[in-house]
Length: 266
Image (cartoon, rainbow, N blue to C red; front, side, top):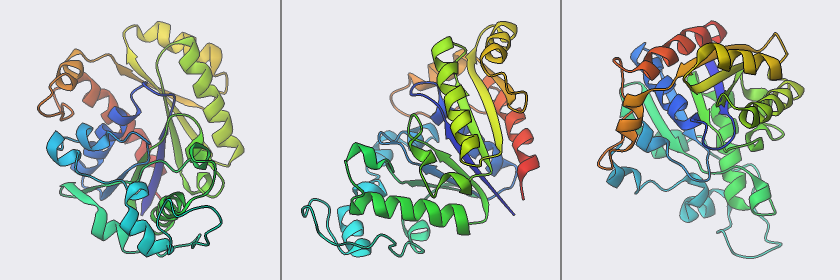
């Protein structure tokens, strides 16, 4: 039994918040969940409720020099032309480097898998991508990937492993145009199930009308997450950043999305 979800979208639309809420909701429903943060500026730990002092000590896999050297045979920064393993052994990483957020919910901060940012497929990126491929191919339960802003996570070898692309957008023209491109790219790379999430919505009819005028593909399911003042207040709390739960508008709306996603559970 497994379900592999990538949460995509432009920067600032709320991908991490949606990922965190889905992770918490699925674990509350009794599913084993692995949440992967593959952003170059990882914040999923905070959104899942880890205290800032603990979250700040997490070293992403793509920046863990000693782990990278042990797994690939090369320490990052050793220079051009150095041979390293493109298929490092990663089977033990989930157990050793995941953080138990709560029962049935584990977090791994992977870091960016975008080789374009460094100009090459370096040992760090080889390790990060190998680990993502392992989790998407071999790990059962629900896997949710909080992706880098844009299309990087849809690189060759990764996209076809996902069951669902959950594309998050704000109800604005620019955000929805980017969402349309991401959904088209996901379909081209054989992600058959694409869901658009309109986030921070204040006028539902207006948001849906705009979305349907831009994303004309009737096969793309659309869900709404309403603007949540309580969520904003929680995010402004510098001492700790837990996502508000059951009494939250956002929690209610994302719970509906979670139920819709469960039909793709294989």
